[in-house]
Image 1 (cartoon, rainbow, N blue to C red):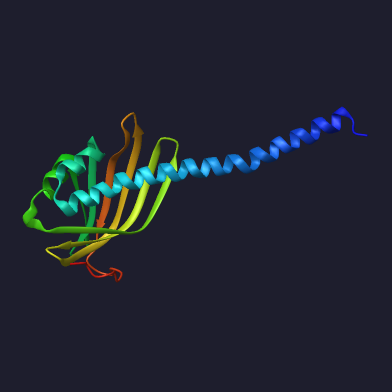
Image 2: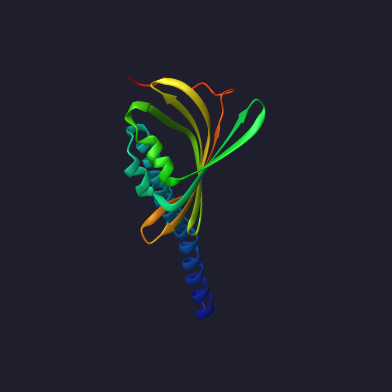
Length: 167
């Protein structure tokens, strides 16, 4: 014969087990949705570059977003800064023929902030120019995820072999 204490404990154990298995699944689903939303925002930057659509880039960047590039010139480190507006204007010229592709992307999310770290290669008029790493910082606002900064390297040597551009 079971006592009421035993029944109560078994019921609590079943409830605890249900939470133990269900909550991580729900958290993972929420994280997957957030990661998908974040990657959609970052992908729009690449799409904007590849289609010369500055408005698309503006749509996913905070108006005050800043960009920094890091490169080497004659073995001397260089850092350049630009605004989101300057960046959007710079890629809008269809005569440039820019193509940027991302590879090996990592997303980290915590509450209302996220980072995306991705390797990339960059082509001008279908000719390889350089490779590097893009790091995007995003913040979640009432309008959704917005890019607040983009820091990237410009590397001319040691670039990994990547698939050829499609025609």
